[in-house]
Length: 133
Image 1 (cartoon, rainbow, N blue to C red):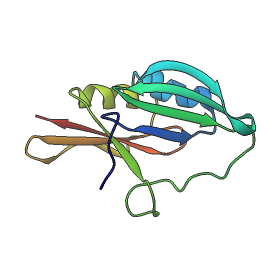
Image 2 (image 1 turned 90 degrees about the vertical axis):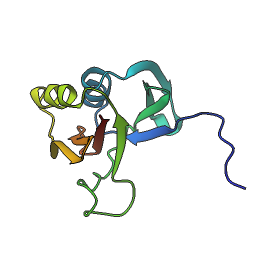
Image 3 (image 1 turned 60 degrees about the vertical axis):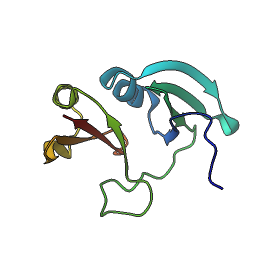
């Protein structure tokens, strides 16, 4: 059977510790389009940002939550990173590094014509950039 998609992209929810720091990363450094905020149950707030047609939902809870297990593929089960296809990988990586963000994987060519970089957000979640020649 499978799913019958009504949208050609996904929406991603990221629970954040500090919405201003996360907005500075996702909105300001990566350039995602701000789509406003909305209240959530339990006093949480959702900050809506678009990455192309994908909606990135930054959710901040008023109570302190446990920190995520940081790192890549060998540190824990579950969602470990997500990928954005770009055509200016070096420029984005350089700008993020200049802004003080951690770059666990600098720009590297994985195979001919395919380069990646991984940038860590303020809560130590990983965002992979990929560029195809």
